[in-house]
Image 1: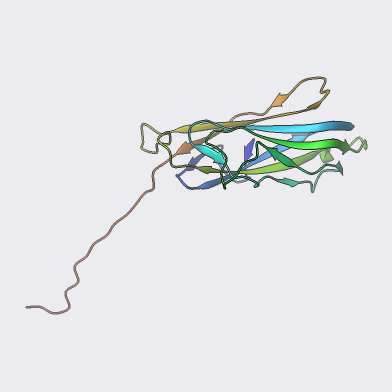
Image 2 (image 1 turned 90 degrees about the horizontal axis):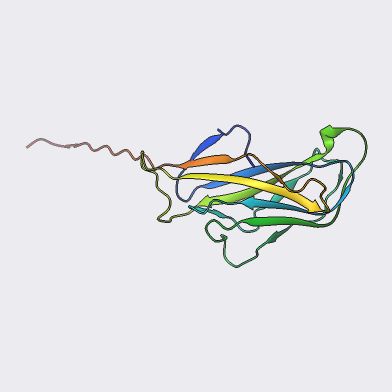
Length: 171
C-alpha cells in the first residue's frame, strides 16, 4: 500500500479523518484467474469505508474484471481492523506486448480513523497504525506478494483560543 502522491510516508491523522491508500499492482504479461488483493488493516482504530474501492487502469493495457469486496456488510464502515479482500473474479488479461510499463493498475481504498479507546493522539502515547496489502491469484506459482508497510500516527487537534475585552464606553 502507498499513500497518495505528495503525502508523507508517515502521515498524521486525527479521529474522523479520511485517508486514501493507493495500492499499485503490477502483473505478468499473461492471463491470470481470480486476482485477489487483501488489505491488511491494523486492529487499533482504522476502519475501511465500505464501497470506496476504485480502480485506475489509465496505464494498464489489458482487461480487468469488475471488482467485488468481502466481507460485505451494512453501514458506512467495516469493523475496526477488519481485513478487506478485493476480488476480480474471472480472467484478468495483461496483453503480451513486452512493455512492462503498462502492466500496472492502481486500487484506491478509503479508511477512517475511528473514535475508539485504541486511538491516542497525545505526544508520548500516540497510536501508530501499520497497513499493508497482499496480492495473489489462482495457481500463482510464487505465492502471495505482500507490500511494504505504510504507517500513520494519530495526533490531537491543535486548538487556539483568543479572548479580548472590548469596551464601547468608559464609566
